Amino acid sequence: MGIIFDIQLAKAYEAWCRSPKGLYMDLFVEKMISETLKPFKHERVIDIGCGSGNHLQIAGRHGMDISGIDASPYMLTLARNRLGDRCELKKADAEDLPYEDNEFDLAFLINTLEFIDDPLPALLEAGRVAKRGVFIVFFNSMSLHIRWQKISSIFRKTLFARIKTYSLWEMKRLLNRAYGPVQMTWKSLPMSACCLRKTGKPLISDSSFLPFGYLIGISVTLTYRYKTDNLSLKEKINGVKRAVVEGIHISHSK
Image (cartoon, rainbow, N blue to C red; front, side, top):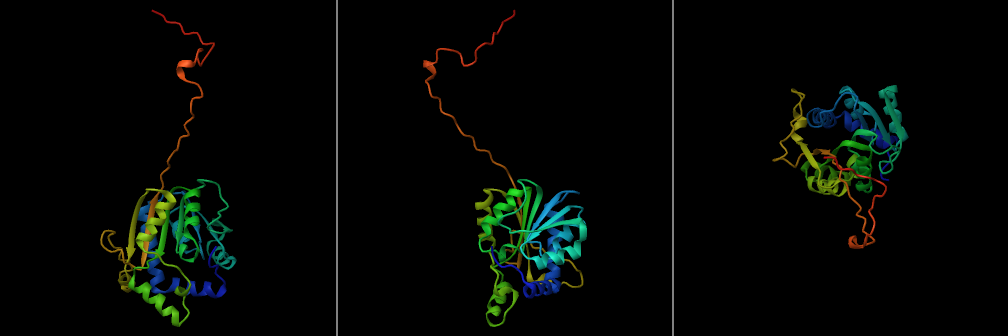
């Protein structure tokens, strides 16, 4: 469990989503979905902590079959008003999803882990219900902009007063704990991208050079590992007097 959006917090988050920073975040998410996830038409996606449905709307534009969960009834009402009947929405916690194993192709955790007390159970659940990949977007604790927002929130209540933030390295460690040594592709969104109003295109950095953007997106390709249970022999091989398989006659023809 963590922070559940009431009307006041929901309005603050919606206002941030409509700001230049929020709009560029949506462009960033859409670019990563298109270029990194490369979704197929009718792939099933679950948006965990879907909020008012912004990112489900983006996934729907790519032809995906969309579902979402959120712990806030108010946010789910906003999402239903936005998406209508084309999306399955449920009230649930990120740490306890009401779905079967591998029920979805992809799972999204977009600005969700910041509001959860312990991110690991939510990551494990996302990996359980998704069979192809998990997509995470989070505010970067190494960003000077995010650090300034956190400091400012001490003196005036803002959305950033209550959230957790993570660095790229912290998130990678969490993902390795949740999924093992999986393939990850990440990109960051620098603060300067919010000033590119004329082009309308977010400046997405090369992952080798700029791990300090105010947002980071990570695409995780899930892999499945198998563990065998070895059964020990209860009798030495030399002590076996009869064949293990009886009643089978093998003829040798010339």
